[in-house]
Length: 381
Figure 1 (cartoon, rainbow, N blue to C red):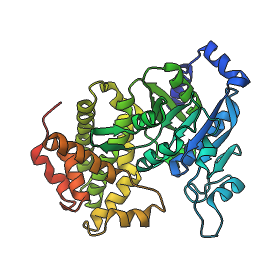
Figure 2: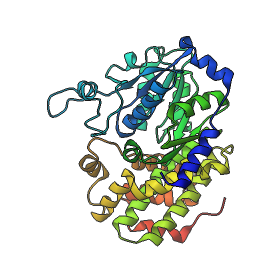
Figure 3: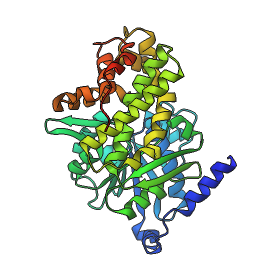
Figure 4: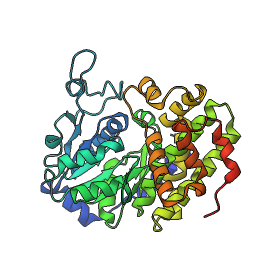
């Protein structure tokens, strides 16, 4: 690791929580926390790897990490969970990476969460509500949740953040973790950062930091759940726009302009929905850093580039199936959800980038419209 990064790691380690009474309680074997990861895709598998390395190392956690797997039959005829447990590797969504011998894949959702008091949600956002409905009455009363899920649900009464959905459905507190986190890079232990967003209980936030923190994955906490979560959600819409720019070979100047304008709309949209959102959140890993990495290398950018290169003649569903091997895009569905909010509240003209991304994804505009929108820039917020 470069000296500058080593210094950063040392500084962050010094800032880790040292509430002795809190950790002495956790270190008591009768109070050890048990963790279940709900989801086993690319990012879910990497999260399990990070967590498993810490549960083995730290006496405040049970060693075993359960990972709920939506069961699939592989081309070999074997069940995915059987292969994961035999090889210690998610051969479909994270091939070549060992998860840790203490990771146990479980296709039974209720069994996977049994006795766990720390629930890590990391599935495509459109599946979260259905999963929560299955878990009602099946989890510990003292359970805490954290969402690594990017996206939102749009209901009749307005937008609902995934952390709020989990809290409302299950009656438990839910924090969030977002950041510049391309899963395959973290899987091979390249240096990265993330932000835990929490509401009121700093000790809970500290426990989540402890669970995820490694020398190559630096985690800090920010008391701004909505801000952290909206950054992780909205950056995927901007990444779609960045992919259009790449597919049309417009160059780095155009892409940088799109990213800056996208960040401005992310901030304005977040603060209109939740006035409590802090400006400082956009300068955490969950903010500008996540936006940059997603616009440079994420799956949303990649598929949007292919969409633009094909002149919008191949659908996102078709390209997703061809290019992502079962992984899901979030940017297209999030753009649709954001558009619904903007339309309902009469905000479309204030957010031309977000609006244009959805209209291109829907086939209403050609990909080239991504730079034509700038004739109607939004007012400043």
